[in-house]
Image (cartoon, rainbow, N blue to C red; front, side, top):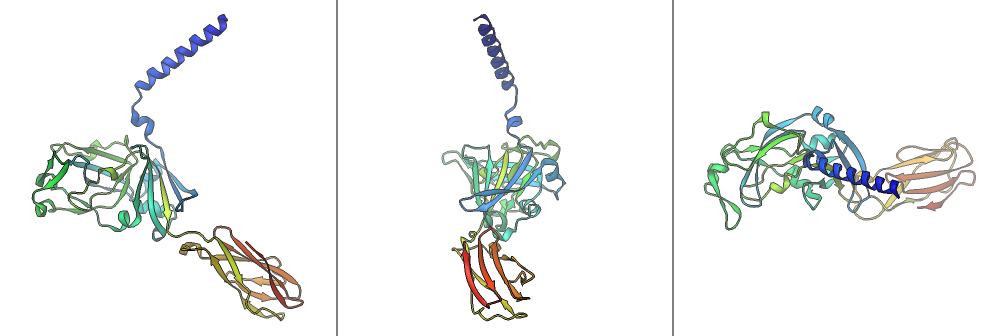
Length: 316
C-alpha cells in the first residue's frame, strides 16, 4: 500500500509538471507542420500520398515574394507580406497534371472546420490582386461589419496581379498604420495559403488559412469501374497474321488520365501484343491477352491459334 501511495504521488507530480510546461509552450510551436503532404484521389476518396515536402525542400523551389491584401469577416483590411512557392510549382513538383484537377481541400488546424475547399478554376484560373491603395480609399462599416470602398478607381491604382502561394515565411497586420516588412517575416504560422483578392470588397481572410498540414487534390471525373475487350472477328487466325484488339471502359465520366490501358501476353512466344493492343500470331498454340486499366481493372481474352478461335474467358 505504501508503494502504491508513492507511485500515485510520483504520477501526480509528473502530470503537474507536464501541465506547467504546456503553459509555456506557444500554440504555434505545437501546430506548425514541418512537412507538407500532397494527397491525390477522386471525389469521395480514397486518397493516396502523392508527395511530401520538407520545409527546406519547399524553400529550394522557385520562390515568389509579395504583399497581399485581404478583407476580414469584420470588414477590415489585412495586409500581409509573404514568401513561398506558388501552388502551381508545388503541383508540378508532385507530378500532378493541373488540367486534371477538380478542387483542392486544404487541411488546416487554423479553424474548427479543418478543411478549406476551393475549386481549381477559382485558385488557378481566376486573376487575383494585391491592392496597395485599398486602405486609403475605404472604411469599415461597423454596423454591417463590411468594408466600404469610397473611391473604387483610386483603390485600384497600383493593383498587382499575384499568384496563389503556400507561404513558408510571412508577416501580417490588421492595423492600418503598420506595414509588414520582409525583415519581420516568420515561419510561426506556416504553411499559409496566400491567394489575394478577386475584387475590392469580398471577404477573403478565410482563404489565408495558416498551419496547413496537407493539400488534398481532388481529380476531375472518376476512374473506370471495369474494362471489356471487344472480341471482334478474330476467328481463323493464321500464323503471321496480326489483329488490333479494342476495348470499352465501363463507368461514367471517366477521367482522361484514366483512359489508357496496358497489354500483356501470357505467352509472347506464341502470340505477342504491343502497347496499342495489336497482336501478332507467331506460332500455333495459345495465349491469354490481358488489358489492365490504370487503377488495376482487368479483362482477358484467350486466343488458341491452333484451332484459330478466340473467346473471352474472364471479365473483371
